[in-house]
Length: 348
Ligand code: ADP
Ligand code: MG
Image 1 (cartoon, rainbow, N blue to C red):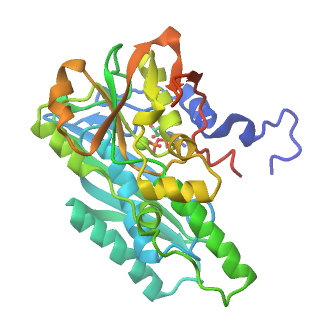
Image 2 (image 1 turned 180 degrees about the horizontal axis):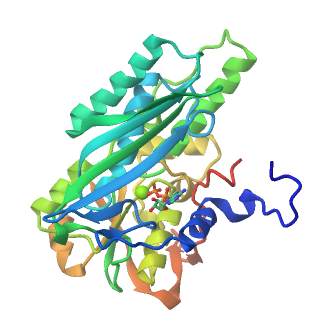
């Protein structure tokens, strides 16, 4: 439709983030209730006593999931979790989800039931209500679009833009597993397509497969931080990879960062399988994405409170903006980091 127009700009030249920048440029917030618009993990709306938090994410067959190895129940579960993760990344509590699906007659009633069994399981586990959505047809693939809505006390919201020099950089859980899980599934799919008689070699890889197929959102971390009266200065969930997501915090907070390679948490199974693929586990953590862990900064005075927190690693500290973002590698050499986060448009 737009093929013959002069001055055509390819989407790939902007990338996902460039495109969002372009869209947000002409957007003006007119309602005083809209506290935060485009640019964070979720929008923030003043509803009087509290803030309402809203976020939406779309999962497209062939782009975000492959039904040859993604069970529909897990897919339903994941589609909820990835949205809840954005609500937790604002230090808020999710309460409702709206789920819209587009599907073709390739899908049966049983398939839809299977998808919704995962959606309902996630809703139950995270204490959110499935409060609506939309159903429509699609010409071929499956599309799932979830909107999550949450609440937070007004003084509890954490944005991407609050990191200050000397703050400690923390990350929950471990990184890179979801990416390696995907590499493994894609390799086994290829083997299967070439020879359907060969059984997939997935044994001993449960952890990384689960990280890819059925991730969890870190509700527990948000709750534990709250119990310990730690309010992060900035927070984001790791959906695009540590380097890209750290870069969002730094850019929006106008700061730099030093992170230490030997402090980046990587599960032994991720490490082992990455090496089998001739991949550097650190690169998988930096650029892999889809881990849905929380990356956040805290004041140094909160160090004692977080130290005994078992599932959080302190990976570095915030520096002045002029220092840029650096990775201090295992030999002590400082390497400037660039955004290499997973970018759906560039990967196409
Ligand atoms: P996340 O990875 O946390 O889901 P994204 O990178 O998808 O965040 O989005 C960053 C910001 O851009 C969010 O505030 C999101 O609401 C906004 N955004 C993304 N796509 C669009 C769009 N097509 N129109 C308006 N806002 C968008
Ligand atoms: Mg996010």
